[in-house]
Amino acid sequence: MRVAMIGTGYVGLVSGTCFADFGHVVTCIDKDAGKIDALNTGKIPIFEPGLQDLVAKNVAEERLFFTTKTEEAVRDADAVFIAVGTPTRRGDGHADLSYVYAAAEEIAGLIDGFTVIVTKSTVPVGTGDEVEAIIRRTNPDAKFAVVSNPEFLREGAAINDFKRPDRVVVGTDSEEAVGVMKELYRPLYLNETPIIVTKRRTSELIKYAANAFLAVKITFINEIADLCEKVGANVQEVSRGIGLDNRIGSKFLHAGPGYGGSCFPKDTLALSRIAADAHCDLKIVDSVIEVNAARKKKMADKVIDFMGGDVSGKTVALLGLAFKPNTDDMREAPSIDIVEKLQAAGAKIRAYDPASMEEAGHVMSNVLFCDGPYHAIENADVVVIVTEWDQFRALDLERVKSLLNAPKVVDLRNIYTQDYMTAHGFEYTSVGRSY
Ligand code: NAD
Image (cartoon, rainbow, N blue to C red; front, side, top):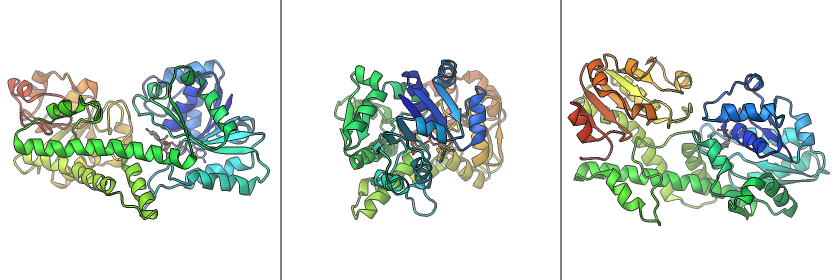
């Protein structure tokens, strides 16, 4: 099949590359000429493990192309995916659909023969109806179906998630479009990946409900972590104790500094707005948004308390800045709140992240970005572990101690234990663990 992928960001680039690897001929389109130029010279504009090799392989085998020009790719396509951003709209928390609608306008006049228009972006309920109306208005004779096919991949594990998903969701009433979607996902279909075919509105809601549920799980265990600290319990043991119950499940029960990233914050907010527009209270989701935002700010207080209530003039070394390991994505990362609040309290910040320092440079200022974890730690008064990159899990603690002004560690990801750190001579605190 021939695929046009509009938007070559995290989702578009990974999806397009994986579809090419499934054997389809894919053209990835982006307005950002710099991105397309980079891709055409073999450079990958994002950090995503395994992506460089997979792109190179499919380009070499002439199944994957990159362009800024929409026309030809869309005219030839059996399926046109819209994978553009849907960020939070300034001021009101709704999803900003201007990029999706602009893409629909661009595609509309170019459709040639039966074409499936697939919304891969995360979009509010009813967006598919509007995309259909835009295309119909511009090109009344076009033969097309608009399908919702939300994406569930995680940055950092995106290729595996795309190729081995728990399920594929397809929202449409068109039998013909279902046929095209099944052909596109054929390798998964043969592997017995469940393909859920629903109405379009249900499919659109599934994506938001999934992300909101995961955000609820994280926020729930974070609140339990706070309680653990007050009552002498250990949140990791609580997580294990509840997670082994199949009805609960062990994933997304790691206490930490609050969720961030390009999806959970904006999608919970958008879901809350969708519900408000429908005059339906989603009290749990609203609470989660509020609790998580407060938590990210509270993490700096944890550091300040640990330092005796004052960090003025102190140097804080942050290990990890990205919202999670194996990505360079800094969108809504907890590190942003932590840095702002520590700086406001008078601290100087040194930081190291294996992938996100360039991005971090756009969203934080007066931070000394360092060459490695040990460089960041040099002459600092405390180390704060913010992102659990593997390379921070086995630091040479003797070296850490020798480089620090005082052996103090705040571990916001619980990657070390109290006993281990005490045995190595550190003053140590973590999240939700009284022992
Ligand atoms: P992104 O910001 O990384 O990429 C979007 C790309 O679209 C940009 O490169 C931009 O230049 C391009 N673009 C915008 N308008 C265009 C147009 N008219 N023509 C061509 N290109 C255009 O976004 P992303 O993280 O890939 O997210 C895309 C969508 O997928 C969002 O709705 C997001 O919520 C959803 N999603 C993201 C993830 C994730 O982990 N990032 C996971 C699942 C779903």
